[in-house]
Length: 170
Image 1 (spheres, rainbow, N blue to C red):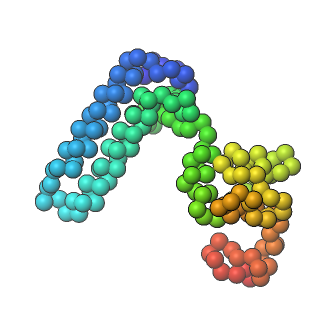
Image 2 (cartoon, rainbow, N blue to C red; image 1 turned 45 degrees about the horizontal axis):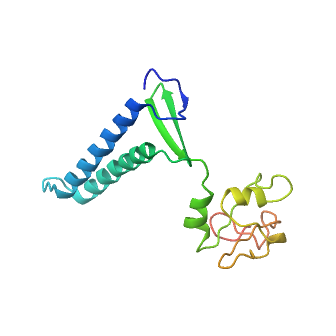
Image 3 (tube, rainbow, N blue to C red; image 1 turned 180 degrees about the vertical axis):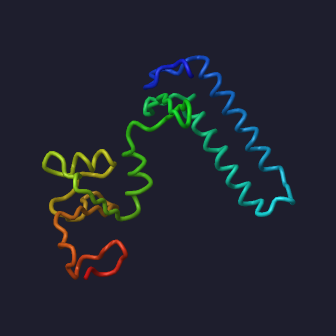
């Protein structure tokens, strides 16, 4: 990897694919070993075990994800002076994940000074997995979802506006 140029990898090189499969398999072995090993001399062993297990599972999942080669993922290579070479993977879109894990069963308030692009919120909402909104903060017409976008907020210090601490403004 040190010879590779930083940037997106459209295809995983064969030797890198083999290395990732070996890493994935080694992680699976470590995960199994962590589950069966007990060291009574270590204080807070369960916390240490859980942290180690979570770290190894994370490496396993990333190696598995890269070797699987989903068309919905982007894989790229970076070099850092401090951290050295790294291989990264991320979804091309998070809309499905947000729709499934965040918007489905709870109300969500998203705020930003730059959310409104092109005259309305529909483009941004769609990229985040939300259905097109009803006008002016009315509930979403999509059954089972409650999605409101605040068009106007009271000014800071107004009695109806609560600050981040959850207490009314001055």
